[in-house]
Image (tube, rainbow, N blue to C red; front, side, top):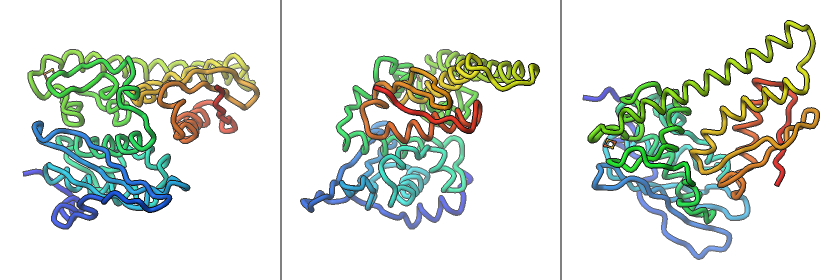
Length: 295
Ligand code: FES
């Protein structure tokens, strides 16, 4: 028996926003759905959203799911979370936000929160005309053929949830939960991600320590090195989302970057910049930094 929170049980017994949203001809309103999973694999979710075209605001959200207690509760939670948000704001919802709304999920059931996040992205990308094939890009190499899970998906879930074991990855995206022939590769990926994170931390600490030892502010070269290190840390998440980022120039406190792939082609670029990159640069390098995209 799983140890579910009261919120999970409440939304399982009395799910909110269950069902579909009918298509409409109303002016200025769009209805779209995103779908993930397959009934053959055990879990499937179709998320419907109604959008006010002028404002990009989500007016309504509903779900249809084939799954367990936590799949129903996660889907219901997601619809409650995203109602009233703009599409850019909704794209910043992580699977962790869904789990937190529920007061937590058993680790073995975290894939239900991931499924919610992915259905939301699928709906928004569909509305914005971004094909999944474009979104996956070349680094979307398949790691787990049993469950069709790409390297990018594994990278994203490992980074965003600080996962450290193959078993955890299996709980979040099912990879490794079949024949387990991909387990060694998943383990290598986890180790590589950890190494990248450690390297970033070492570089940042070294630059700051050097500046402090010399009792002076960071030089431009040190600042650029730090910015590069932080961008390296952000890149895997963007890659997993079909995008990428490259440093173009640093002009005083203005960090100019080039956004590529899905990041550069959709209007959520600004949110990506502000939330994923600028916040990290301000935290690790300087609170006065401003990020600008150049084309
Ligand atoms: S290939 Fe991943 S479990 Fe079989």
